[in-house]
Amino acid sequence: MSYCVNCGVELDSSLTSCPLCNTPVIHPGQLRQASPASPYPMERGQVETVKRKDLGILLTIVLSATSIGCALLNLFVFNNNLWSLLIIGICIVLFVLSIPAVIYTRQPIYLSLLLDGIAIGAYLYMITYLTASDRWFWQLAVPIVALVTLLAEILTLCIRKLPVSIIATALYIFAETAVLCVGIELFIDHYFDKPLSPSWSAIVLTVCGIIVIALITLLSKRRLRDAVRRRLHF
Image (cartoon, rainbow, N blue to C red):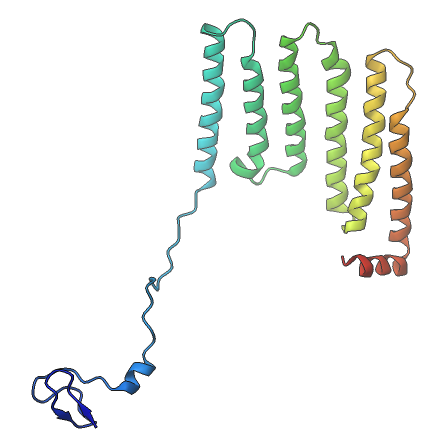
């Protein structure tokens, strides 16, 4: 038996409203079936994604404005030396690095790495205007940047064309690390007119050589490779 919550009159179970005051009748069973009200909106909102083109335009404007502003300050205010070349060079490097990620995503990765190396070389060349001589640039900076760019291209080629795994990637990295260290020491010896004889890089070469031989052994022996993967969980 139920009663009207407004006037208290006795109600039949089949009624949907009070016959005396027309107050809606709500049965307890209907309250249990109804879903609880949520304080949060049911519809999900979504923020509009920023377009790459707009982000590229913004980045270009910011870097260009920074370069032009520093150049004007260097020209009319702080004109003791060409310090603005350092800021302009950094802006160029950041712009080139952002091209494949923001401006043109379909750019081949090999071209991107080449442009990165050229941009870093151009930045180092700008520094020569703040130094007494540019000999360090041609005999030390250029060879090292060229070697790093070449090794990055080779590493990318190996990862994209050869079988890829954690062991194989480690093999490529350790092998290129040995070549890079030996190359850097030889370039330094040549710059200071010393005999081309590896010293500290020979230690790196020995350690990397041992690791490379071990990794090649793992890759060539399937049972050993599978055992290492199970124990190291990769």
